[in-house]
Length: 219
Image (cartoon, rainbow, N blue to C red; front, side, top):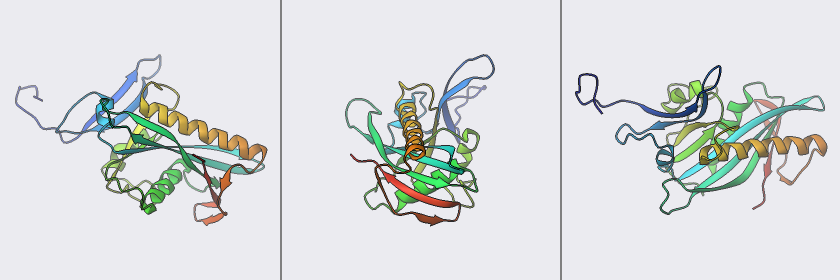
């Protein structure tokens, strides 16, 4: 890469963003940090550098006087083949928080990350976390100059990637976050109707909410 004076330059940070024009502001489909040593505009090539990916999305709804926040997690595993970013994905679990006293989305991120860190079966050193909010903060969270929540910094093996849940589903990033959004909304529907569904753990106490429980998706 060369600057205006045609001298070689080495960028300190590279980002790739996919968007399309609309009447008010551009619609951002996805945004990923790139590698300054291997600059490319291909989102699939960037995504393909990760061994494992998790999409996490939180929706909140008032059910019987309680604000219920459901964070659904979709796991993507790389399929090794000719495509640079061929991932098979499906839901793994969801967290249900009630009456959260902070940002429910950020609480969901922190809890999911901590859960991954505690899981001895997840040993990958290159993990993508696909989210659909806080786009303006993601770069600072990725370089660890901004905490996710109350001093909790993103662990070194994780990278946050932004993708819109309501557009661009032909891209695997958008397809995964869209699936997480769907499963989060579906869980809220089930809780509103029955208040129990599938397999769940015992209720836990949590400093950021009155109540939290985990929901497991069978596979």
